[in-house]
Length: 299
Image (cartoon, rainbow, N blue to C red; front, side, top):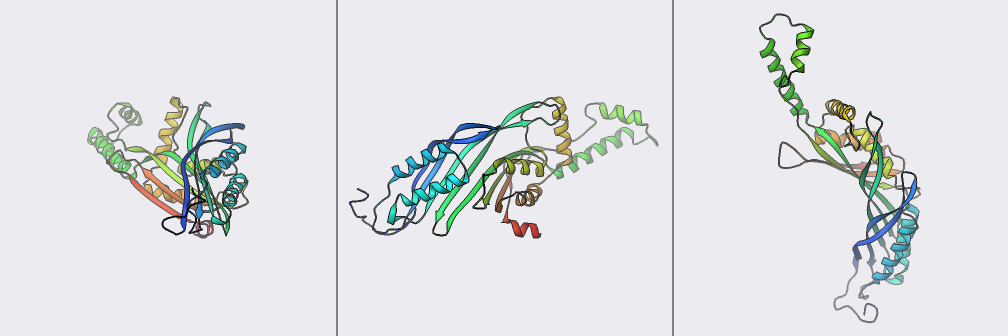
């Protein structure tokens, strides 16, 4: 029908294909080869205004085979070229986006334990008359302690201290330590919340890998308070210290991430969205930033 009948209405289409195609992708996990469940969006442009449709099975079968061979920039770039070529004269472009969950073994902060973390990652390739373009995306979870809430908590504790010792001209160190050890002496606790950073980068065409781990490690180092897998008391204590050292608004988080992501090898430009899932409000605090590596470096 797609080949032998004419469309009732003529015109070119930017993309035609399938979203949510189930597949498996060959990747490396903790130094070992693995097949992970993946979901693909596959499409080609329909540039012949007189062609009624495309051959979706061709896209499906080529993608299944390619992802099982190995999810690399070179293979994904070759796939979109093959997808375009499979439609001969009617298509000038092809597009593939792949989503999966990448398991990463993460060491604990101080206790020497480790645990698995699952990171949502994506990669994409587009083939047009201008050539192949590649993207990679990761999502990071982290804790964000509100700077304003931290300041108000210090103010409350100062008021409690003055109430406890205000009449005394001097206070001994032992009395202060005893007071601090009592429940309720710290009169306010700053609120923090689980937060998310979505990072998407455009990669150099000749890049050897999508660099998900590099993006994850760079982003988490910049933020300083990534959520943890294995946690013992010593790790939780260290996490509390890190949150105290890294209070941040969503604006702070976005500004920390931009130059860090721009420094990752092979990154040409970036788009970052941070979302703080507020514990004080029923709404989220959001900040976005994007730019080219050269522009960020110059700043």
